[in-house]
Image 1 (spheres, rainbow, N blue to C red):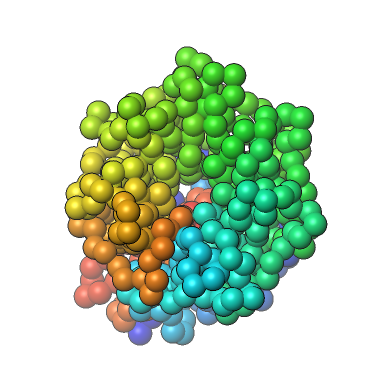
Image 2: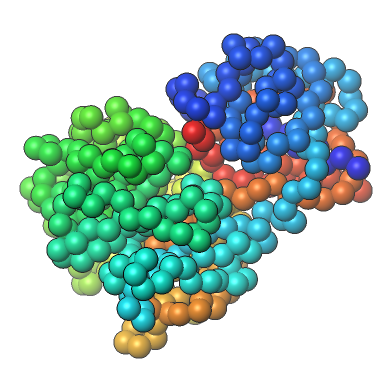
Length: 466
């Protein structure tokens, strides 16, 4: 039996721009057909192609992305015959996108070293990684998962910045940037692939790597003020936002479209609340992004949104928002996002932030600080309780209708959470005959066909692998 995998352009999304890095196959430049490109691809590769193709493609490669280069109007794949369909994966894949989801949670030190937790089953079980000697005795606030094997962690203290990196699922962690990282705590990190990442922290610190962390360079010196930066999100190798504390009367948003070589401040005193700070940022693409933050415990938190790459920011704060801070936001796509707050606030939007629904999680005494999702139904939230309540991990598989606590092996105060894009599900059934599809960057969907019915799993925006 064959499981049909179909990449399908359902709505017009902005085109992702890519460059020729290792792990990217261009069609028809490198091979004459998509099948030839697939046959010569490796796990994690991306096939980029425009044009009209008439062929049936058997996909025997695990974790392969195929996408148009210049939008769905420029790339059409039509089946040479109606069976088995246009794209058909072969071989064994994981049981489901939820139950094989891999992710990390980070937090304060416990038993003499910083906390790094890892799961490969969607959080049904969590294991602590590292040990004394390998993991410094500092807190970790930021984490960014590239895939189930590759992740960065950022943290430190007032006199020490720490970046750790793994390429083997956390079996080993390598400390990076010693001698290059300023002697100051790092709070957030965002990676687009195995080579490219940004980290931010105290005193306006912005660090960037393009070689997997072998070297880290400071960016924004002389442009970004020396404020506390607590948010960073990279869309691709060129587009990145960083956010932070008040400067000249309102919170900081800086944006780069050239990989951090130059930075532009965004927002204004009219758009951004006075004396505020922005703690979280997440983008669906180069144009659509959210930032969240607060002023103090006597004022409500706030949410701002841009649909034009940050030229303008619109207030989308929910009416029933909590006082204090909104701490993190995660954009699943241009319509769907989660946002978390102090005092147990979880909010969800399905219409680009025009309306936010407050979701019940029975956690009014918790400070929820991190959120990560793999699709519009499946997400994780992290935080901490008051006093000695310890860290919290919550999980939903139904779009937030129900949030279920998960059990960590240790429970210090937790920082952020980051889940990698899942691998395709493995389900028996007949291939669905697809006669013509358009490929639209940068989305990937898996069609699962059971008894003539179809279920679509949008796995999440994929970054170009290198």
